[in-house]
Length: 339
Ligand code: ACO
Image (cartoon, rainbow, N blue to C red; front, side, top):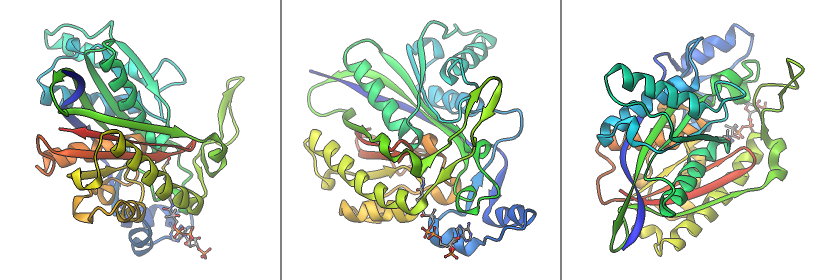
């Protein structure tokens, strides 16, 4: 018998406010900056994104995604002993967004007459757009060694808060959102269902090509608190490292791309996704694409796309998925999971 971390529920949440490319054209025009629907669609595949309202935070999106994932898993927050939130846009410097999320989920549960989830482990992982892959990897390891039985792994981001709306090369690319999965320990003969393999990496020398170089000191934000990116450098690096991580994760699972039913990549840019699928010799019909609707939601993009594919009936029980992400740091990784 092998112990696995099985996905028993998925959920996601998007802010109500949607902005089409036309809305972005109008917004940037108020600053005297030109962009166009054609440029954005041709270079990125993005048509729409969602932005959070003032007074809302990553934990609010995470809360809605988790309530939905817990419902799908027929679990209560009191059944969860580990919460991992992948985010680069936390509510506060500290405490972690995961602990804020635990409180919100517990308060809602208690208001419904259910037990609280207080006492579970809860922490954030910060690996930018690879954060959900990192979070799944940590949760899988903790479940395998028996230090957790049921985990919520969440990607939640409000990148609209860290965009420079005077920089057309970045502000049209990102959106806000959250996605979540419930993992449960289970034991079977054979391969899964559950997480079959993981592979994560980082190389800190690439910090300058994608970063938010601000920090808090002496009660002031010092440095620039908005996203800076060398898009072409990121693009070139992304396709290569995603191919490497995918191949390593597949080899660890004893699989080839032929065994994959769906590739669910980080949704940054349709051209990066097409390039990776081509290198892995996977047809585009096997790639889950939501970047057109959500833009790049960083750590939220993979669980958002997964939940979308589950709700659409694309992803079915028994199918094998290859999840992969790349982001600031540079960080990258892949997970093979059987549903
Ligand atoms: N509207 C109109 N024109 C624009 C815009 C815009 N929004 N942005 C840039 N341009 C112009 C540029 O100024 C440039 O004009 P010029 O030729 O007169 O100088 C021209 O378009 C081409 O610019 P490039 O930067 O060469 O465009 P490119 O084809 O490389 O596309 C892009 C840019 C979309 C950013 C691309 O490089 C890319 O997707 N890179 C990867 C980004 C990514 O995936 N980031 C997320 C990583 S994950 C994370 O951790 C956040």
